[in-house]
Image 1 (cartoon, rainbow, N blue to C red):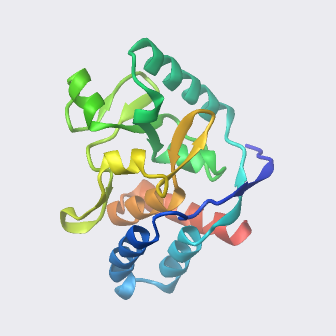
Image 2: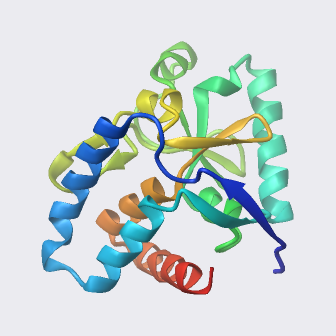
Length: 194
């Protein structure tokens, strides 16, 4: 897998400083008993206002096109959708994703009569469970609609919203599944080599 490096301005939080500071403080409280490496990685991702991204893989581009077609066919406004999970890692060139995880607005979930749990829309596109950006003990840092509508949480790429890296990193940090731990290490390596 080869990627070209390109520059992207304003990867980090910019507009809603008070809200972002509250979220950062909540998350950092959990790091007190954890390794210095995790604290440094989170700070690096969170504070990265000017950074280098990688051009996504061809698979990622195909998934985006499939998502656009699905949304058009089902009359779903692209402004009501955001990419999360491994697709974000692919976007930054950290690892190629096999599928595309998305969040849709509550209005779309209701209109389409989709449940709050995860479900596949196509072979390569899956809606994740409601309230993706959460931590331990049911703490929700931001509701799905806020991730979609508030620019402090996402960037735009080819008409599609993509959640910022720190949101995915925090989710993986708290989930701690085997694949999440591997991805956290990949992000660490990406920061060190970036």
